Length: 70
Image (cartoon, rainbow, N blue to C red; front, side):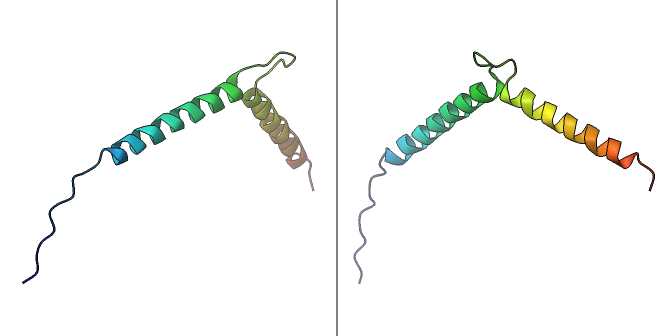
């Protein structure tokens, strides 16, 4: 007959690691949000505002090009 091993006590290291991952994610996401939406000295717009302007300019050029008759 096989002898059963006693159950191993669950360690709290998994719970600690999970909490650490969530904390790191929140910190990195917060830093990225600040970098994307904040205006820096010497710049008049944020990165997101510059990206939106670039899309608007590209769409304006594209629609102007489509307006020409063939």
